Length: 219
Image (cartoon, rainbow, N blue to C red; front, side):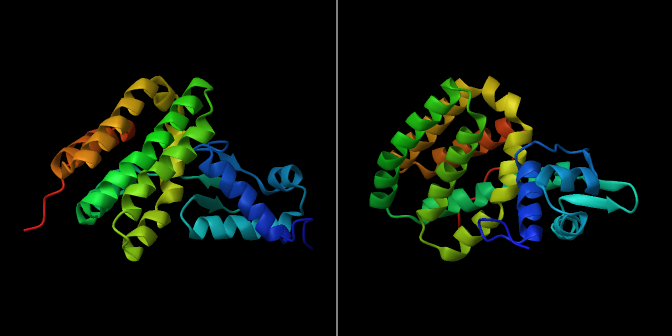
């Protein structure tokens, strides 16, 4: 059975449950039941069961037979690892980009910061999160290293989940976050890679609540 969009019932269930986990509708610690999910999505329990098994394989939930599925979220170690990896990817990419590429990227991202400010004013958390994920992805794009970009994109769902789980913190820090993004662009434009790395480390530490070590320059 497929939906009007051509999705199978299993794909529909998977996408809906996954989106609700990543978007904070089902926060860490939520117990999900097959029957309730099937009713909400409008499918039978079989595709929901298959979708939950897939989400367990991906590490988002733990299934307890006859009880339901518990949303796991990210452990403190996973958050630390995510922040460390993002710091390495973004700083390394910016370091390897040409000075002209860095200047052009800074100019392009100025408008992105304006859009972020607008999302904050409208308290549109979902839009801000998608904008900030794209903003940070642009730093990795600057090196034109497809493998680093692939690694970055594989982290996007974890980044999205973490940002939504810190939603109130983000909204409370809106002015500081915009200032931090502007600081990153200023360092990018002047070619101050050390300053960029220090600013990014502080930015990630403040948003994730996890202190990070600096990224050492290559020998």
